[in-house]
Amino acid sequence: MKRSIHLDEKLEGSSPFTAAVEANGFVFISGQIASVKGTRTVITDNITKEAEQVMANIGSILEAAGLTYDDLVKCTIYLTSLQYYTAVSAVYQACFKGEPPARETVGVKELPRGANVEISGIAVKR
Image 1: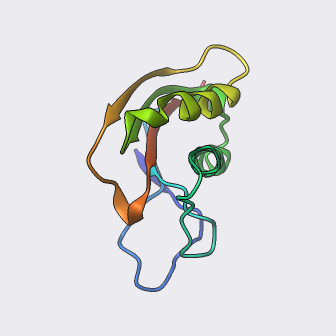
Image 2: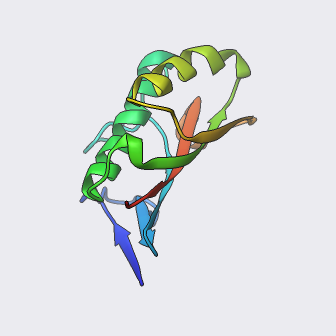
Image 3: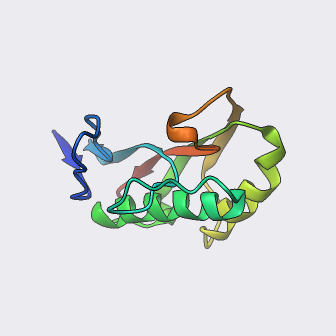
């Protein structure tokens, strides 16, 4: 059984996008950038604020699925510059009460809408 999770944020002209998909007790979260809810604004001028917005977006998706950050078991972080690694890691780590999920960080040439960081994740319902 598969269930799509949406955040009721249909912006006119936006691409088809499902925030997350729940299947067999797992929630697969699509890559999130620092888009500000209900707007076409993406934070890109400060890597710490950008990472905070990305994690807030992931938190909203987790909440919609009835989960928290601590239910994440795997994340992938994409950075347009590995110089952002320390700042993004600090924001990321602060979201978890216990051990953070498994993760990898990948340097990429470019991300959608000029973003500097994108994070996807997999959570599990306990």
